[in-house]
Image (cartoon, rainbow over all chains, first blue to last red; front, side):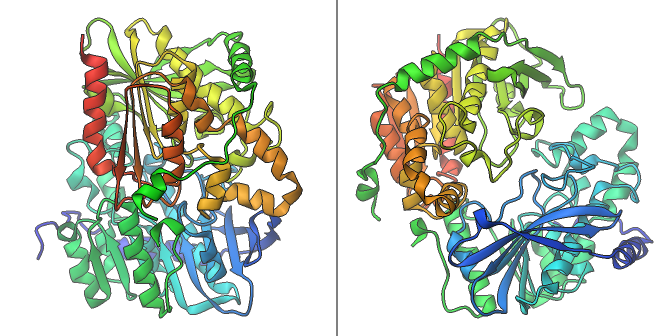
Length: 300
Length: 308
């Protein structure tokens, strides 16, 4: 057993908590509507804005990009980042990738384009409603991520054997554990991976949101820990059944690797967006059985 | 492409004859509007070491701009200050780390950023091409002035030594650092992976967002290319270079797929300062070698801001 294993105690009703969320989602019609975006379309892909519904009910936004030509296409689903802006394809990725991959980028509740009626603050989002696990903002955001996968795999252009969920935080792993549809995931265990063990010292945001909160409300440490326990990344790992690339210190992520088994690659950052980007592009190409990678010009 | 080719890559950017007059006029318009700054301590974000303040001020067109202002709790006399200007898609950070090192630190959220978008909100993507055919209403006209007025906010602070204010940022923050250094009396500037330099060169050199926004726009409206080029010449960091005379360091990643290093070099060549150094990091992309460069920039600020 790795020394880095979080000390978080699994709530007795952990499974019931998430079963309820998924039941809510299943009872909520997705009611998707697409609108073409000529400005973001080109000779190799067509872009759409998408409106669809998650639990609440809450109306969400996403960018969809579909390659021209005959599908189905390998698909990249970008789940929500710890920022307000939602991108069609991540900054720095070769735009030509949109000619090979179907791409769906989620704007979760509170982010731009999904900020009516609720607009999130950054910092601020990670403690929104944290006093009550059933009212915690990320209960809805996790459901939004699951709904994004639902939407992506509902598209006939999507190759359901090659759907990667990705973004640099815990959410792809959590989503994959709770909802079928993703065939691969790329994640960076972060805020929800043993957060209470990492609160001392200088962490930087978003983890510092918890430090700020505890300075303001020192008597609520148990409350904070109780809610965050439902989001402990480790508790989801055993339910992940797809190949995964996990970014971060391999020693720190070893407990996840032990649970997830042979399908997980633990990858340390090279502290270079170029080198890390190449590793990620090569991993996807290999996993999806693609003949090559589509790289930005400065990486060739 | 090898380093020499990147370093010597040319530029298509032409400096308009009235470039400096244009900006003198815009700056004068902004200066006619009092900052009307509010500074309120934010207890939630403050720590035992750093006082954090919510700041708001009026900028060009009377758009209200937000920012985070950080001061060391234990402070005496006038402090050196650092203005931190933000990247394109992220929200401006709370610069507590700089305050811990003894600086007054201000991190502004120019118009359209989350805390400053009540009056102007072109979105992301969107900002880069908002009114891109008209230099008098282009989105970055106000955005640039918001950064300038952020510097003016620091100038006005009683606890700040007005002769020791630096500016820094990376990506969009790198481009904004050049703009502030050009239009204000900055003690030192550090610009990383500068965006907003060689806009029209960049859309040829790279097919990635955010510059892709311009390619998208011209794909839909190809007949507007001349108007776009003419407008952007007034906002190009390369054209601000001759007005930058303070000590400056710049860092680029030679594999930068977001802000092509060729354009960073093009901007660097035009900078008038005699005290300027380029740090190029091979094997690095848009991070621009920050893992190694941060120490260099800290030493640079210490040398120029903390020495007597």
